[in-house]
Amino acid sequence: MTALRWAEGGLGCRSWWCVTRMYMCTFIAALAWVWYLWKSTTHEVEVPPGLLVSVWVFAGTFSVGCCSVCNWTMVQLWAWMNPYCFITYPADNWPWDYTSGKCVMINVVQWILTAGVIEESFKFFGLLRLRSSMGKVQAGINRFRCRFCGRRGWWMKLADSPLAVALCGVAAGGGLATTENFMYIFSGESVDKAFSENDLESAYGRIAASFAHMVWTGYAACGLAKWQFLEEGDPDRPRHRGSYLLRPIVLHGLYNWCSTLQRCEAHEETYDGKHYESEGCYLPPAWRVAFKVGHTCVMLLSFYWWHREFSEIAGEDQDEVSFPPRTQDASSIEHVEPPMI
Image (cartoon, rainbow, N blue to C red; front, side):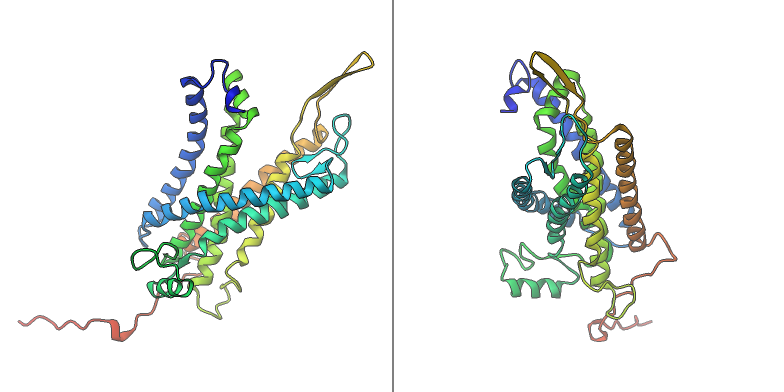
C-alpha cells in the first residue's frame, strides 16, 4: 500500500528515480568503503574479491531473512507483554506526558536482546564459514557434507589470513545493512518526505547505520581472526571464537535505543469541542539532546574499537602484536639444485 502513495501520478519515472536515488546513496557508500579497505590493505596479503562478494551476498540474503523473522517475533512478544511500552513504541504516557524512567530502562534491555543479539549473531554466523587453510575447508565439507560442486563446495570458504577474515566481517555488515535499508527507505514516512519535501534524510541516516553495522561485525571478525590464527596459549588469543561479539551486541542495542527515544510523534485530537495538540515527544528537550550526544558517542566508540583491532591486524601499528608466520613443513619444500656453471 505504501507504493500506491508514492506520488499523486502513480508509479511514474519520478517516483522510481527518487526511491532508487535514496537507496543507491546507502549502497554505494557501503560498497565504496569495503572497496577502499580492501584496496588499501591488500598490499601484503592478497584477499580475493570474490570472497568478500560471497560473504556480502550471504549476509544480505540468508542473515537478513533470519533476522527479519526473529526480530518480528520478538517485537510481537514485547508488544504482548506491554502494548504501551515496547521496543519500537516506548510511550507509556504518550501523547500528553513523557515516557517514564521504568519504560526507558525496559526499552534499552529490549533493544539489546532483539536487534543486538539477533542481528549481530546472524551476521557473525556467516563468518563461521571461513576456514584458515584448504585442509580445514575440505575437512568442513566432509564433516557437514555440504559438497555442491567443485572441491571447495558452496558452504566453506577459504580465508587464509587474518586480514581476509577482518575484511569479511566488514563485508558481512555491509551486506546486511544495505538490504535492511529497503525497509526504512521504502517506509511510508520516508517516501512521503522524499516526494513532498524532497527530503532524503532517511537515506542519509541509513548511511551512518550502514557504517555502524560494518564496524560492529568487523570488530567481531577481528576477534575471530585472532582466534583462528594465533597459537593456543598466546595471551592475545581470545578464549572463544565469539569472544568479541559481546561489545557489538551491546553497542547495537544502545545505538537503536538512543535513536528511538529522540523521536517525536505529533498528536492532535478534539474532545468536548476543544482542540488539543501535543508534540508527542518521548522525552523532554534536554534529555533528547543527551540521547543525541549518546547516539554520537556510541558511533564514535564503535569506530574506535574497530579501528584499533583492524589496524593491528592490517599491520598499520607496529607496536601491536603481530601474527606469527605459518610454519611450512620441510617435506613440502621443493629442493632446487644450483645451476651448473
